[in-house]
Amino acid sequence: MTILKAVNKAYDRYYGENDSHVVLKTARARNGFGSAPGVILDESKDGFGVLARHYEIQEALRPLFGKGSPVEPSIGDHPDFEHLRAPRTTEYSPITTLFMDMEGSTRLGLIYDPEKVFRIKNAVIRAAIDIIKSFDGHVHRIMGDAVMAYFGSRGQSVENGAIDALNCAATLRALFVHLVDSQLPEMANDQLGIRVGVDYGPKEKVLWGPYGYPGMEEVTATSFHVDVASKLQHAAGRNQIMIGHSLRSLLDVPDLLLEKKTVVKNGETREEPYVLPNYLGADGMPVNYRKYLLKWEAYLATTKLASAAPTLVGLSGEQLRVNIGVVDVHSDASISQTYQPSARMLPKRKQLMFDVQIPCQLRLPIAIDFRVENHGTEAGRVENNGDHSDRQEKTRNGDLRCVHWESTLYRGLHYLNIMVSSQGKRVLASRLGIWVE
Image 1 (cartoon, rainbow, N blue to C red):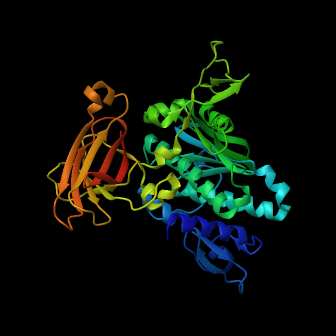
Image 2 (cartoon, one colour):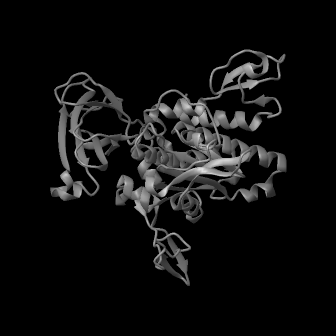
Image 3 (cartoon, rainbow, N blue to C red):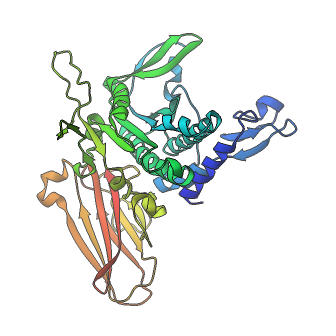
């Protein structure tokens, strides 16, 4: 199932569900029968229930970002820190926090009756949860029409947790607008949208512990960077994503994916580079914590989602099919692992094999150009950022496949641009993101 069909199907199901007959629990708890993780049990039939997997969005999204099988939905305490509840202790540990809320949703109450408003908001929130789980995010709270989620776990690097949050934010933005356009056309044209804020908190600045008292408590994170993710969400405009300086620095997000927020005062456009209010630090000086708008469409266009659903990022027509294999040495014919573009960090000194398949027969001669575009602090220390180009030519009909090799050398997000020309005219192109640790 394509991702757009999956999102529409999930929304329709969530909108139409009667929660008085659908509960999330194991069958064993009610009648002695076991159930698979993440299964919805409809208890409306004979007390035994009808089991149905509700994983459309995860099953469509997770493979595009190198994820495994669907994961069970959950909410509340982050599983890595549940052990802090009983002894009521604290612990320092890094985390990336994402806040998302619906913007303009108040107008729904002016158009629809309360029951329909509830169904619309609930369907959107449920779809957002599915998208968050698709990127291994943990939903911590639902606050009206807003969702707070954590990204990162002990089993992965802090960089990969931050990349998951970035990919989730961009996907939420793209799929939410698709949902509004397809399901609520009367609320399109910038009347209903979302705002997303994301930031990363390093280990020494994030303290986990239980708030409240036994029986009335939750384990959560105390950090400026958790709080500022909410501030970033509020600072974002409709259908915008705002990230904090800590996240930008952790991943060395390239400048071409970022822009500063601007405001118009007294007819004059001014930059607003810092989180407001600009709090004073312990030294009495303004913190000047920088915020950046993410050019989500340009970023998402470097992922596998762009070829799976090109209309989400303004693309159309046939797309190149590119598979990326990862090996230790160039001569190694066996691919030890595969890589999905912009999905996770790769170690340095790995060899990448790009297997390019042209989806249609083109008129000869055909030329395939490969252009490497490096970014980040490390690449900036070498001549021309280490950028380079290569070309392969095809002169035989039916020869629709070529292989190209590259190495991972510099930390940051880099691009391989692939351009296919037929009789000297460009006809196909792809831009693939490669994160290097």
